[in-house]
Image: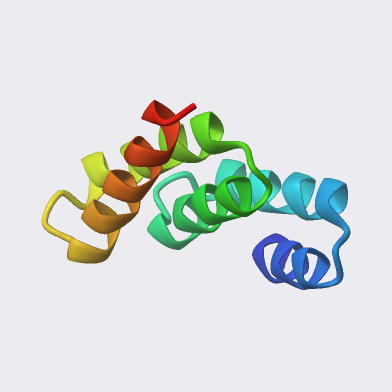
Length: 83
């Protein structure tokens, strides 16, 4: 419920509500990779690369062999070093 609400709010441009909903989803089910991925993407899309990289790095620990997660971490790491 929180995850879907967060995604919907994000699409509507209501970033504060989206962030709160996505964090609530993650806190309720911390092992759900989809929620950590959504948070990493949310923060990246909102110019908060350091926070995005933190979530992506946590996700990589859970899914070290996932090429999509590996690519996300690389992209975020490159963006963070350019600042």
